[in-house]
Length: 206
Image (tube, rainbow, N blue to C red):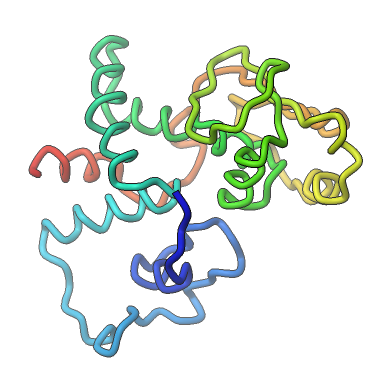
């Protein structure tokens, strides 16, 4: 799904940087979008649930159909089978997407860039061509940059800009531009400006 709406307007609506980019700094403009944005009343309880859902869905750049499937079908079923909480399962599946993994590794500066890179077939998954951002990676999977792109200034610069540690479930080899999935994503290690339990409650009430 392509985001064709004004991205900064979405960030202002949710009052958070939805796209993990310094370009969308809501601190510079905290008013809500629209003619009467500054005077909008506080949300009802349902409104608060809706806002959490919208934040999480938009952060991972998913359509409503994609998001509902992960929340109500994939994560719900997995949580029961694996005896883990629904919110933990949901977080894990959102982070196990191919584009999320590329972004978290640091090979892409934003989720949007990671989505585009995967769509354009820049990476191999376990040595095979792969261009599906929504595919879920598993423990032991290896993502590698295509050989012809290893000298690309884009990837060289992105790797050079990586600061701090990658998440514990990912191992990045900067020199080789490869990513290995070591474990399932761990809640609490990555800050998410949405209450995942409220997202699940939203769909439970729908």
